[in-house]
Length: 410
Ligand SMILES: Nc1ncnc2c1ncn2[C@@H]1O[C@H](COP(=O)(O)OP(=O)(O)O)[C@@H](O)[C@H]1O
Ligand SMILES: [Mg+2]
Image (cartoon, rainbow, N blue to C red; front, side):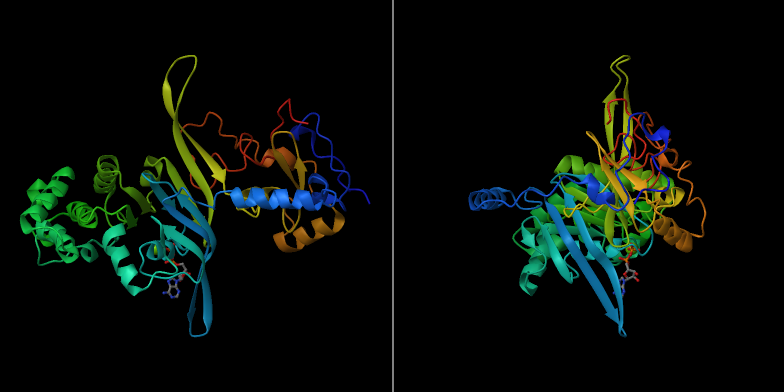
């Protein structure tokens, strides 16, 4: 059986060889299965596996195939569907994603307020699935701090800002009153809130309330500060000030901070923004400063990566698969420095795609190929890579490419 659409379009690479046949399809791209291994070889492999560090062993937060299913009135909602996430100690990172994608579900689990259905979650060495009630209480008091979106939910209305900050210290015990007052005053100072010390929440602006909430969350010097859309109710200028307070906490105290946000401006400020889609982490944008070797000028470069899970699964952005009419099956080709992903042009593959996708842009083997991702390389694109799209996780420089065309490839 031969592929109806013959070779991949020339635009995708000058020297590329087509896959040998549709029937061998994706399998043809994989290395051949090894010959049956001898006992010695099996033992060697098992020993190598034993010596390998556990997934996320050096991360402060590690979520491994996390699942959370809600059942209400016999209806099941899979809010988290095998989510993987690692956060290093000292990171300040953002979680972004559409409404309903599972962000708050994840935050509630990390906050110790909810227990996952399956998978594994560890924060600062604590196992969030097996903690008993007492350990959970201690975890919430000592290990994590939390800032909610609703400003009113974070502070007690009848206490001053200073009293709000000393309260968690008092509940934990162990420090004298004078020490507590001093520590709380220092936290407020650090976040430029000296003038708010003796005011009650209703005498504070929305931004001041959220910054005070950050001071409250930091009262017992937690390892991790979690914030679920903390700037969601604020205008952009105020949101920026609140984000500045998170940055200060991260820089001054070394607190690891995870912020859920809808606010692209906030997501653009962090070094790493992870996108959640359908209860899984789907892509992440990394920002770093690069120096131009010619001019010596530094610029911030953003690049988007797709997440590859430990089973090798990868989510292709919908706009990419749609533009090439990819559905159900794709062809993979292993190249020396990347993997190519091709639409399935076999007769039944194309028919299936047409049936589901409305027939648009499906059969055009000649027009597909590299053009869909052709402009998405993002090599020199400094700024606007959004969490999904923009520079694109599946780009020329990225791990998976249908558009590379590098002279060296193949
Ligand atoms: N307590 C709950 N009971 C039932 N369904 C829930 C509950 N909490 C969240 N969900 C559902 O789980 C999905 C993810 O919700 P959520 O984590 O709040 O998303 P996000 O914060 O990203 O908007 C949604 O479909 C939501 O309706
Ligand atoms: Mg939410």
